[in-house]
Length: 117
Length: 117
Length: 117
Length: 117
Image 1 (spheres, rainbow over the protein chains, first blue to last red):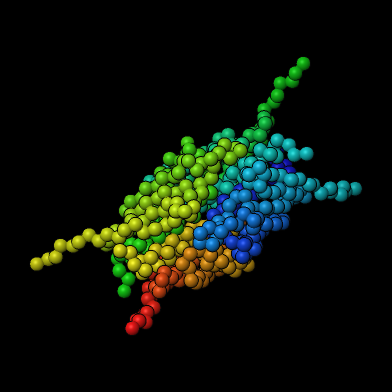
Image 2: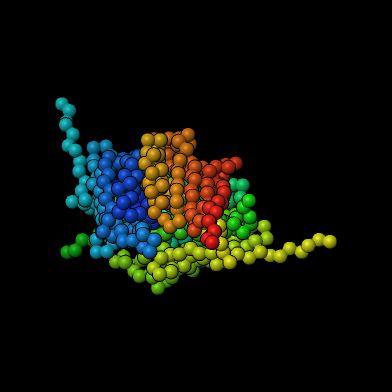
């Protein structure tokens, strides 16, 4: 009833929703952004069905408050994730779109299987 | 390329992943559980593509620590969500499965459209 | 070495820091704000040393994104908390100050004890 | 009315409460624990009044779930933080105590000032 395309897509949605809410609000600055990017990537890759993830946080939005730091906000996220279920891959992303941190399916790709004689 | 079934499934995944990580760790007790359930439901229903959500937190796991309260943990969640994209509905759930808070697609349902003459 | 004034202050700091980061990022709107306020208050009051808490979220900052909702952000918080250790009370607050969500001790109050003859 | 000892203690409480709730729930394993420790330390040190912080996460509690990872929970935290206000330092910690993740003031230290003639 539910196929691998749908399962791969579901897993991509879960991971993007999860990381967004886990990390939003973290104190951050241009100097520490790389450390947070790595920590998010490493946390995501632990989870089932995640094949690849790239997290890039927009430093141009990390304007300093009166104490000299910023806070990780939704529009800073540029994330691309690839999940896999069976032979089907889903590529999805989280990136700003018209001032909203939008999550979108980029493509679903099925690896053709050799037929058996 | 990407159909409404896949989009509805993606949105369900996002919402389940999001609420899990937003709310895990909240101080909770049997007396306040209903208030947290309502707050989670109301937050989820605000988001795009969410048609319905039911959140039930397992009070039997809310054992009191030495200060008399507990903390919302993954295995407490029993959530069912319905997302809709166009005429397609996805029902998904978050519930304990073999000691893991598992997110699963329950069903995808397409409402048949009348054909035009 | 460490007196009740300091302990009460420490507890107030813990609770304000905790609730800020637990709840920031929650989807919210003017219609659901009251529900979130109640849930935060009920979660805080469960914790040790908390006597009273009032949470008011600034609806004027809940501007709608393209999907019609907002996200709980630091500057929305107006929180006043009273902690107690022994006969000492600490009143502290979290409120915007020059575009920063500032946490401050408002007052520390010790209840005079009757002496015994 | 409120002295530097109390202010330093308040800031230590804020930071411990904040990091606890910001990071609890993060997917983690023994392999990624060091990355998360660094990210927490770097986030905390950005905040005002933080002089030093050491975060150690208890790997022995990182038992693998059925998908081979764990989730950062309260009892894993071993954190020591030093805050400073003026010439007063507060050392505080977050560590398990009788199955509860307890936050405590360890010591408050004032640096004696030279008097002027």
